[in-house]
Amino acid sequence: MKISIVIPVYNASSTLKECLDAIFTSSYKNFEVVVVSDKSTDNSVEIAKQYKCKIIELDENRGPGFARNRGAQTAAGDILLFVDSDVIIDKESLNFLSEKFSDNQVNVIQGIYSHKPVYENAITQYQQSFYCYYSWDSNIEYTSSLITNCFAIRRKIFIDLKGFNTNIKGATCEDEEFGYVLIEKGYKIIIFRKLNGEHRVNYSLLKLIRRNFAIYIDTIKSYLRNKTYVKKIQQTNYWKVLTGIIVLGLIMLSIIGIIFTSSKEAWFILVFLNIIFLLLHSGFIKFVANTKGVAKSIGVTGICYLDAFIMLTSILYGSLSYFFSKRF
Image (cartoon, rainbow, N blue to C red; front, top):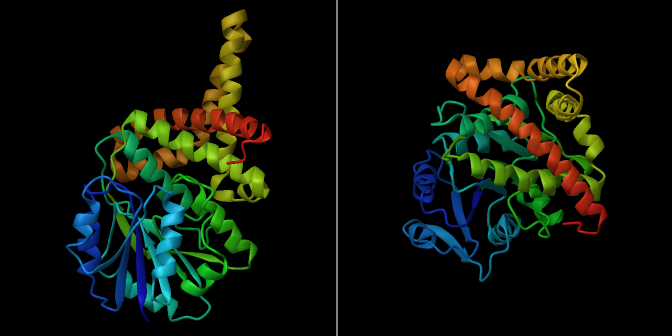
């Protein structure tokens, strides 16, 4: 079984070599690598040329969805494995993948980020632990929220469904939207924990804010365009996060109430709402404390508030933008 590994690349020189090294030292040998440079301006292409890769250089920046589609069209394998250029897969991952796809009932596989790394700051740790706790919880067998960090699919299915929506230019919600298309067509997305990789990333506070605003704004527009918001609400692994957004909105209203009234009731409501918010996130905070230490868990507690605020404001902005005809 031949596996085509498609890597979209945009100015990825800091991580691409390690990504490719991990792939080419795999114990499984029946694979090809297709690197698609999305108009990179650094030396990413020169790095890729040091390996036995098919290299596609786009003449303009079209976004990761377009790059992945282009790579899939060129690929010769029966199985497509999409790997981000900052993900370092385990040397046995391709073996596990081949074994899994030997079952004809398996069509789509979601890989995961390893939770082994301890990241330098609480900001990065929050985002990586969020994926591992909410998106890929060990009790979940299938996912409804596709994430293309490390994701595999039979090539015929991907081509038949025309791949990712190329109207979505950024690395935001093109993967989740395609996941809903797959589910609508009757395909199940299996979370396969043996297909895992370490994520070479380091977020500053500003980078996290910009990144998550862009993702959440595009995501709410996608929900409205495709009427998939009900599917998101029905995902039980996210209900505490979604409820937390509402609670944070009420916290902000109570703060406004205190500013204008200074009443004891408003203070009581504020304290009560914060307790509810922390209880909603207590499982996640405990998860970080148990796996990465108390200091990291204290840090991610503050990021829980920040991310809920980003989600809330993104929902408001994205919805208004959508209804005023800016659909993408």
